[in-house]
Image (cartoon, rainbow, N blue to C red; front, top):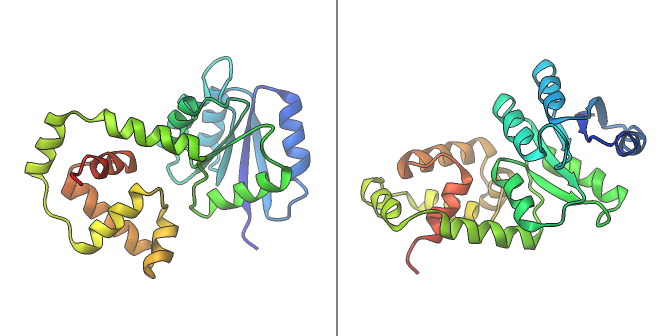
Length: 218
C-alpha cells in the first residue's frame, strides 16, 4: 500500500491534536510532523518532503497563503490542502492562485470528507467550491489588460487541436489526472502538452492559461 506522508500546520494545538487523532487511524496516511507557524512549516518541509500539507490560513507570524507559496516553491511536488475557518471566497481563491490544491472550511466537512480530500489532492485532483471557482474566473477575466492580451496573440505560436483541447480542459478546472482520463492518454503526455502550451503562449501557470481562454473572442 502506498502511504501518504503528511504535515499538519495550525497555530491551535487542540486543532492539531484533533486532526492527528483522526488521521493516525488511517493505514495509508503517515503523519511526519506538525507546525504551529508558517515559518516552522517551511522549515519542516525543507528538512523532510511530504506528500500533503494541511495548511491553516490565519497564523500569527506568516499567513497560510504566503507559507503555501513558499512551500510549493521549495517542494513543487507537494500538495497543499487548506483547512480553515475562513469562508471568504476571495481569500480562499488567493490560496488557490498561489498553488493550493484545494480547501475545506471547518463546519462544512466531516472526518470522512477530510480523509477523502487528502487522498484526492495527493492523486493530483483539485477541490474547489463553486463560490471560489467563480471568484477565480472573475479575477482571471479582469487581471490581464487589453495591451498584454494583444501582444500575446501577436507573438504566440498557434496551438495544435490537441493542445487547444487540453487548454480548454485546464480552463474548466480539470487537473492533469482528470485530463488524462478524459482524453484516454498518459498523464505524462498531458504534462508534455501543457509545457508546449505554456511555451507557445508565453505563459507560466494554469492561472495564466485560464486568463488566456477567458479573453478569447466568442
